[in-house]
Length: 157
Image 1: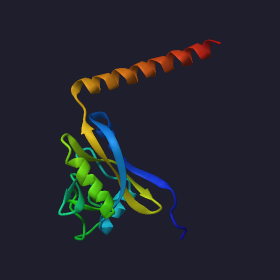
Image 2: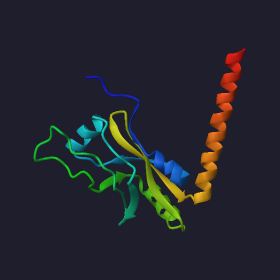
Image 3: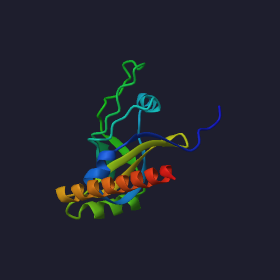
């Protein structure tokens, strides 16, 4: 069987990009059980309530919902169990230093397969204020409106 190559996106946390200023991103492996991997291969996961934390020098991903595998038996996994993240010790040290700053947290941005292995992209993020969110929405709407006007003008020619 040929080896899987490239990046296959499973789930994305669009809400995180709306609610936080993303400062730095890291790619981490995940410690998963067999039924979790099968459920991910079926494209089923939800990152919206997820967060990462560092406990006892180890990184953990919590609140991520990977539903039970439908064809699983008694060996099925718990849907919201904490999952260990695989990071280098230096990276964990950097994350500890950055999350000790006030207002910073670790949020998962994407869950994907890279060359056949499950990976998660986590980010050091700082929460946005309400007016920051409104500004981002206004900027996005203005860009969309300009693009619409440009396309309409090109069609008239």
